[in-house]
Length: 283
Image 1 (cartoon, rainbow, N blue to C red):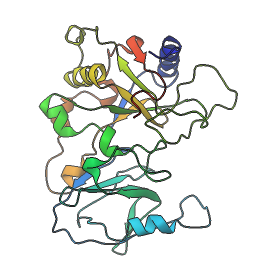
Image 2 (cartoon, rainbow, N blue to C red; image 1 turned 120 degrees about the horizontal axis):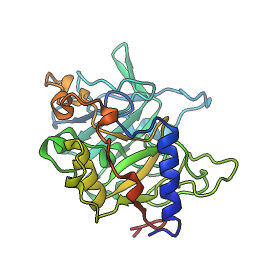
Image 3 (tube, helix red, strand yellow; image 1 turned 90 degrees about the vertical axis):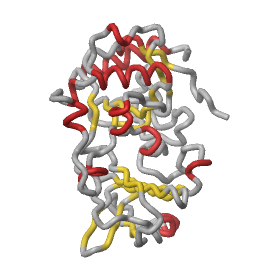
Image 4 (cartoon, one colour; image 1 turned 90 degrees about the horizontal axis):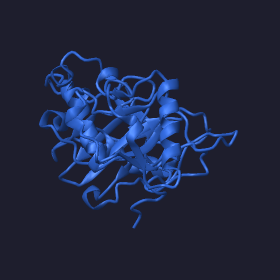
């Protein structure tokens, strides 16, 4: 364990209580739709727009976006971040977009990247590309709807905190951070740090929502990774636009079964978190 594991757990609980008293699961907003594309989808170029008023554009980024197979029905997520992910297994390529939008038949986005050889990748965007603050792609840490339907999440889960260590401190697999701790307060959790739920916890005895149990069991086996900041502690689940824009039904009403997403993780034993050492698992 990290030498400050217990202190980090206390800080997590502090944030949990300070910011709404729950851990939300984002779906419609601040979660990316994932469009898995066949090899016959026509490509289009995506241009960069300067949403942050930097006064310049990244020519390498536009080169990465020169030919993207975006289906005609695709839409980015709702909300200010307007995320979108395109994955084409036949070319083993993935594209990620932040503040994506379409106007007059042309796509543009503020930031993101193109990741070739996805199946052989280490799952980290080359700095400074990618949408999250840590360089960790949505495709790796989002919860897929099919996983919840199947009853098992077999990978680490990305989690966003509200207050983290400063941006000069981050842990692998993150390669950067937008952390902010100007007063240098102690025991702020670094971005990129991994943590798990104590594996001795009996999940089935907790009386949680079925999705909560699925998340908790994955948290024991694979854990969480701090991959971003947000206005509340939150997880991201695959945006339902992955389905609805192609004419398929929204899978989440059946998955949540009437429970609000901010209540799905009610009863999760957050006080039993265990934080792993800095750079845990780095090759």
